[in-house]
Image 1 (tube, helix red, strand yellow):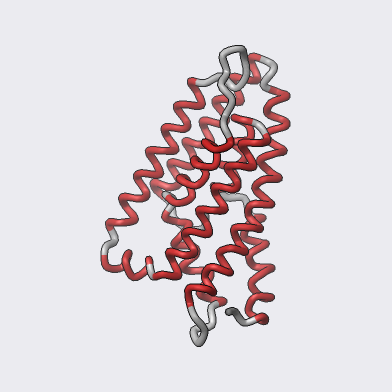
Image 2 (image 1 turned 180 degrees about the horizontal axis):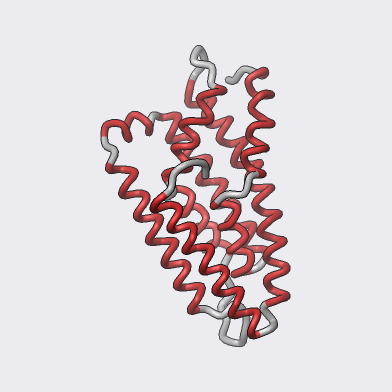
Length: 206
């Protein structure tokens, strides 16, 4: 399906990509602070799934669709902005610990990670710019996009899970102090708000 030489060249580039801090890594960290290790891993899995879907869409030809109807990305972008702002407000209003605290369900964290990744146009724009450098046009295009996208998704899951679990363990321990708990809430909400601003006004790598 793919040229082994191109794939070997792709691997270090993909590893450097997923090790570079970006919005997805910050989102996994924020979910760890908010819900603990389990939700952090689930959110990372949602992000990885979104990256794989985006690679498939790019391989099918979303780039051609966007060229014909640029407003599509505008709609997707503002849906993502609204959802991130919703998460920010919800985080501020919901204590991280306490008798009335509802645990963050991993299924919800997975859904949040998936939605945030799919609604960030910079992800698919980056895929459209990055993966074609390693695609052999003489071979079927879609399978190559899926393999490369799957590789990015798997590497990203490992890295983001590690970051999220570290933040989750630290966050849950610190949250037992009421003052620190409030600070963590506002920091986590601030991360979601900053991601919303980035999706709204910035492009570039995911």
